[in-house]
Amino acid sequence: MTQQPEFTTSGAMVEALDVRKSFGAHEVLKGINLTIRKGEVVCLLGPSGSGKSTFLRCINHLERMSGGRILVDGHLIGYNERHGLLYEMSGKELARQRQDIGMVFQRFNLFAHHDVLTNISQAPILIRGQSREQAFARARELLKLVDLEGREDAYPYQLSGGQQQRVAIARALAMNPKLMLFDEPTSALDPELVGEVLAVMRKLAADGMTMLVVTHELAFAREVADRVIFMDQGVVVEEGPARQVIDAPQHERTKTFLRRMH
Amino acid sequence: MSEQRIIPARNWGQWVIAIILIVIVGFLLAMVIMSRHITWSAIPQYLFDETILEGIKLTILFTVLSMLISIVAGGVLAMMRLSPNAIVSGFASLYIWFFRGTPLLVQIIFWFNIQLFIPSIDIGSIHFDTNSIITAFVAALLALSLNEAAYMAEIMRGGLMAVDSGQQEAAKALGYTPTQAMLRIIFPQALRVIIPPIGNQTISMLKTTSLVSVVAAQDLLTRAQNIYAKNFLIIELLIVASIWYLVMTTVASSLQYMIERRLGRSTSDAPMAWRAALRLLRAEGSNG
Image (cartoon, rainbow over all chains, first blue to last red; front, side, top):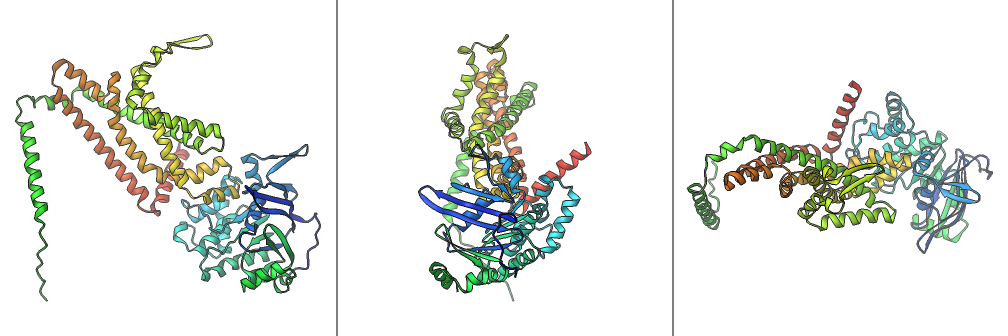
């Protein structure tokens, strides 16, 4: 485990400043402030409906914020700021920003009409302009990393949930992102398949990838995360080193949540 | 061990109905065949008549062109209807409401007579006589295409909406632009839902084109009518036309069956067919 990170804005990969989000009258995020340093692995815990997935989706602007700012690697996400006003970016500008932010979904969302190789290599070819040979070679390398060597020709429906999720991770990695977002990556999996996906994520963390993981896997968080952030009802309730928050929570809400999880 | 002989249950009711049907159909056939008012020899004589064959060409041309135009226009309308802009999506809804809500026959006659209220088109110093542009052919094609586009828009919208929203999110998250996501991810998957109804519409269009005979657009039915207007072999020529319509719809149906079998047998074959088609296109692109 790494030592307690310092909260300086210079080595920051993600900075969230007073992020707010409402769906109609319902306020889901009530001012989230947090910083994730480069190379850091952070797990976002909290009961369902606490806003953690919504917050994650704000980071690559899949969800439009109602207020606040998010910076990834120093760049304001989703908006151009001119004369103190925020102008939402065009689809093309958003696409440019999202190229560098990998995302893994709860329901995998592999492209159903593409085989595994195309799933992984299409974006690098189409968006990064890599040659087919280069992208295919990298895809095979990534398949090896996620322990699916030789499955290039399989279609998503031929794979188990755990295998699909590992392909989805490889697909995100193929764009060489500087940040990986995981939105409950194991919640849709049969219990016996959770381990294989977590194993891949463990490898990524060990390789120094900056990761923000929304999860209910306490054991994984305790073991892999540098830091844990506990959210409830749209606010950050508690954050700190993983073992400290999980084994010795300070706040009543954190304690209640963790008791229910065990 | 010997096989047990089994006598299946007999459904006498079904037999009675079958016999009644045979009697009725036989009676009707006999009535037609023995009719002294039908000149049977005229049917083979006109079946391959040059005028009739020209009409078939035009009927096929109307079908193909109007389907192509309506697929493009319908695609645009479908995307407009799904637009977040209220005016854009409102326009598409209005279009669909109007063109589905009025009879095609009325639309055909309307386009044919458009010069009654737009006698000429002036763009700067260039002057067109509406009559010289909107010929019977153009009027018929416009009416068929614009009308079909409304139905096509709904088919395509259904197809686009049938694609799981997670597919678009995944494409967005990877950095696909909205256009790339539509062309590479959403549309190819919508095709599987869209193609079977497009096949049905095409088959139906083969017959619908006969409506343009009201403006004498020289399709199969117009030609048959022109011939029987002179020789009064009305039933004979209608039989000739019907035979050809049946041939065309039968061929189109078997084509549709073949395409659908390759495309929609299961989720497994859809991507295969799509990839095979893409590979073919790519190979041709690199050769040429």
